[in-house]
Image (tube, rainbow, N blue to C red):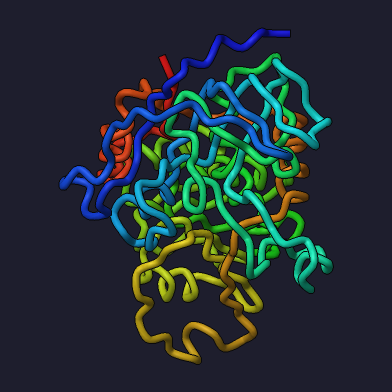
Length: 343
């Protein structure tokens, strides 16, 4: 088993100083004391951290900060370098994943009913606590995932949010066996969800403004790839909206066949135009949101991804280029998923 490199007394990290447009430089480099794990916590020596659109929403202020100068990042792959009291699942040197959902109360009716993603007291990595845009990070053991030693950490990182939330969105879309799925927007999460749908026998139509993303969709096996506002070549049984663009909701709803379902995957969406009942909702079409994920979603997806052999398309950046990675994400210049790699 690999032995983690020593974590320095100070860590390098990026924090959101003053949320605002990415051109104003909301993300700044900082040095902070290396954190010490408390009860139930693991200290990870970060190997890779994916860059999620949620991180961009936090930096630009679409998501109101929960605390000052938070370090973003919640697609974390790392090696355990220290453990706190009341831990036991992991040992020093184990490869572990830290994800968006960081904690829940465990006692409310949502937690007891298997819907911990709706817990009113849930907390999140990179929003309520510092995340993985750093060379060391704390992760609660109860919300950590065991990851394989024989895979590239850079390609594992996007699975921990883009993959998991894409998987939950696919399930929320209620795609029938052999069904016709429309995917609006084709970034990190969408290109993973598409592969799950294809592996399960679906026909996938991708609609996105990026020519590069359309090319990737076809390469992965999509039946068609058009502009985001195009009509797909056939009616859809289900659709997932990954682009945070409310204007696309009526477009996607109108593309659904009778009884079709649209699932909205993002945590943030611009305003939705007025829907016409007969054109967009009649004939039992459904519109659904997706809120975070459960740990069971994560375990199911990570096992499925390994079994199916999902291909993760990545654009690596050094940790020192985190601000550039966010700027590229904002401008749709990222091919697949952006991933930060500490030096």
